[in-house]
Image (cartoon, rainbow, N blue to C red; front, top):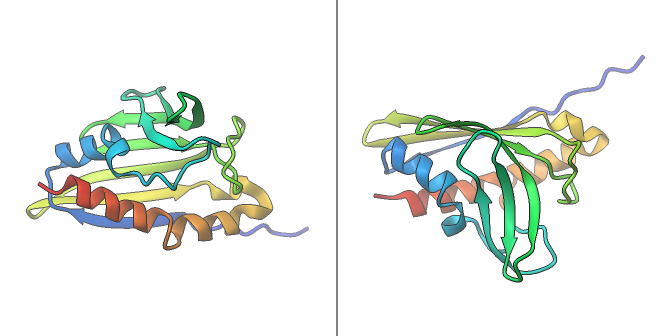
Length: 156
């Protein structure tokens, strides 16, 4: 019997010069202002990603031609402290309604701003492609770059 090794969750954090309320709002409601147009899954150019502001809401991409591409959904909506998104993208960045990995984002007051901690977990659900996906989302073009863009947008 072989033992499958679970890939570690991707954990990234950044200090944002903003209140937790502003940081949460910028991350969730303002995602279309900071998310790069290159990070898209649809065939058309990206207009903006959208996170519906409620538990059970959709997380999707709206493209310039009006088409929509599902990314996942909102599992937890607790402004200004916590957001949990269900990421349903395969390592090929296609939507799979049966796939569930979680992206939890915590917003904690720290000094004159907010500590934003992101954890992308349950990557083992991707099977033999889990480690490749982990490397992609934790690499330079993944969550570290996205958090930096977010922090720039959220500055007070």
